Length: 229
Image (cartoon, rainbow, N blue to C red):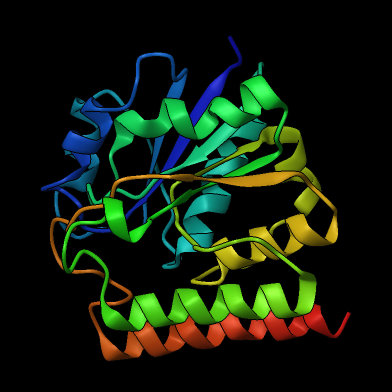
């Protein structure tokens, strides 16, 4: 079996993080929770649940992901596959096995867990998220003939391919940056339908007008930046 590590960015997720960790399949070698300046008990809860806990004081989803990758780069034996998963319990961690299946059995480079309507709990995604996902994927199809239908954060990628992307976004553009760079580098990719439920707690992005607008601007900026290259 390949070595699989999971990175979970977390900001004030004390009520959900233990549930997420508990449902991650045993095949995972290391669960890395990146505390992104939490003011609650996220750190102690995650540690008690058995995760490796790092702290990134710069707020931002991308900052947290890059912190996790920095830790992985320092390991004596690096993983074959990296899985990114949110800490709010909106995803079903047990579906990790089907998300990594195309990488193991079909040699696919990148797999996106697509939050398809038929597997999505009612109101689990806000209208602005639905529209933003549709617009971003439509633009990627227009500019790059991409087949993406979602920017879902539950995703898996070969570690060596991820390093080759040279990820740089520090905030909300992380997911779309990965997909755009995968397209530019002609990586193989696919989507796997995953279940999605209402998160525990309030979203730091879609839960506020400021967060939703900032995320939208970052995503569109990345798309138009790459369309001009």
